[in-house]
Image (cartoon, rainbow, N blue to C red):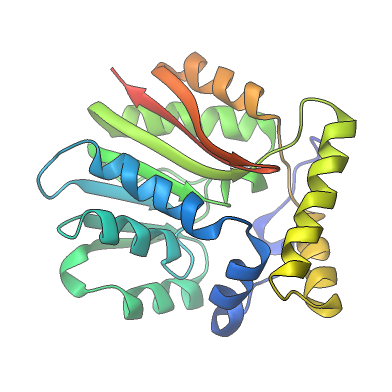
Length: 229
């Protein structure tokens, strides 16, 4: 994986009008993966938990959290105004406590939060950027809080990474992704800075999370989590 730094302005922009349908076709086991994040927040057992959603996009992950915890208070954090506008339109006003427009290298909102969640955003950071973000997330959490990340990961070997890529295309095609959509997805993924799952779990431990674990995995897509003790 290249560690060359990239600017968020270089990454091709998703169309908010088609983003949700594309996500359903391009992310295998969509309901299981997104639902697992909501379940992790629900398992905290907290009343009206405060949840920071990093890279909130159109609110797909936030909706999964609301489905699991209807009284959740969300802080949406994303660098794209059109995506945030769609997220606000889809979510009930009582669930949206605040919105911040910024990328993941910016300072995080003041906590403490009961949970920090993210879906398919942190892989845009290089490895030092991921490690730095994990430390900042740990600081933003209350004791006992959880960080749950739905992420696209590399395999532990190049051969397994290639196998995951092949699996991904088969699943996307089976879900209805056509040539144009898949080629556009490949163009966006060229900007990804993915890392192996084991490395990311180690970085969570390094940041102070205990325990850490992978909750769900389907090829290159995983939900992993760490708890602040």
